[in-house]
Length: 212
Image (cartoon, rainbow, N blue to C red; front, top):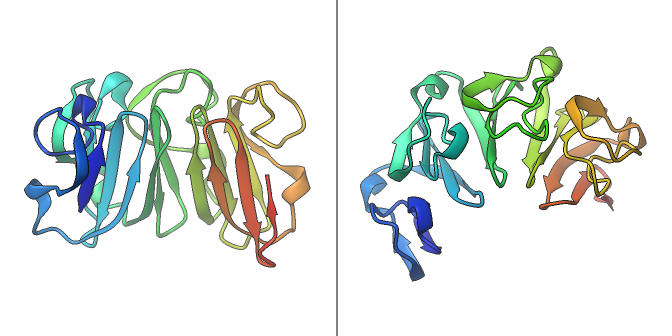
């Protein structure tokens, strides 16, 4: 794993909060096989082939999932996630989403705009299952500045939640949604993946058509 750029809060994982202008190997996990990495505003996350989940950088309001607010300067395991058999982890600006191979999703970090999807505005310092989506096999998730998206593995259902002031949820109104809310325009459109920018969103269908 290599990282570079702003090193504030330790988000590069090199053990010190310094910037790097060229890619630098993250030495503390040089023997790990990292299969996926994601970067937020001030934190980072990686998934290993052993299903171990590592987070580092700013721990403000619990977004590292380590049950505290402490910054981590090197990749730090989140033990509660190892047995969840994750297939994907994504960092929003100030929150984090994990997707298991079984299609369950977990969120944590700042929830003050409803972006965690738990029906409230509370922050979470440890990974918490999104109960509203239990029973659905989720295939893709995405996290923006203060909103989140998910779609089923079959592509027939897509949801948005969190801040909606720019219309980024796709639900036709601008109010925040505290729980996953169906995006009616995408129902039955065979959505294969979803993506979030800071305040906008996109989806790819089976026909490779994008909408956002």
